[in-house]
Amino acid sequence: MATTPPGRLLGSGRRADVYEIDEAWVLRREREGGGDAAGEGAVMGHVHAHGYPVPRVRPSGSRTDLVMERLSGPTMLQACLAGTLDATEAGSILARLLRHLHAIPALRSTDPAVRVLHLDLHPENVILTPDGPRVIDWSNTEEGDPALDWAASAVILAQAAVADDPLSVPARTMLTALLDGPSSHTRAALTEALRRRSVNPTMSPAEVELLGAAEELILSQGRTRQHSS
Image 1 (cartoon, rainbow, N blue to C red):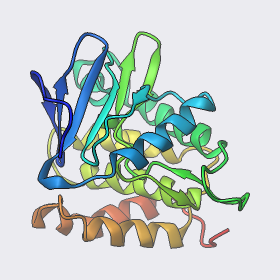
Image 2: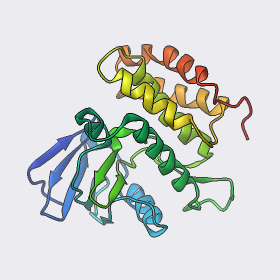
Image 3: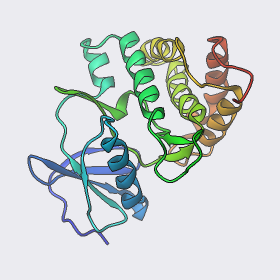
């Protein structure tokens, strides 16, 4: 049961709504009783302690509610659409954020190859605050091979790039910039990211149908390594 009564609705995503608490804090509430706010908050606190740009969090006493720092600024996607951020720079920022995250040791695992993964890092989950980009929505976070994180972001961008809508061109540019540098992206990770995306309950049938074309686009970038290490 939620313990913090929601205030004004500030925004809604595929799975959760964000409500105002006061000028400094907001409450993100998972719909339909889902989520693991305590686990997500623990990961956010861990990466924040290692200097990663995430909102501060505080305990809510609820499985569905996450209380976190209120951020000001547009999302990366909003900035791109407004023309205040170049799509190539947006893709490069995403790549830097992934590299920074994967330099942080895992919270639970002692395996040095295992890292914290975001698994949903895309332009709508990066807020461009006056202090720099901040990464939100850690509801998919796991610990594992960084290659899966790179593949997950690539699939999301590629899916948008082949959708034949106004976001297609900037998404394709972001994808190119994301993969245009050092990464741990692998073919095995891409296969797993595509599988996960295909069974994601927030995906519409039309979105799932785009995954084949998205895979072809990623492979055409020529950056996907054929090995898994």
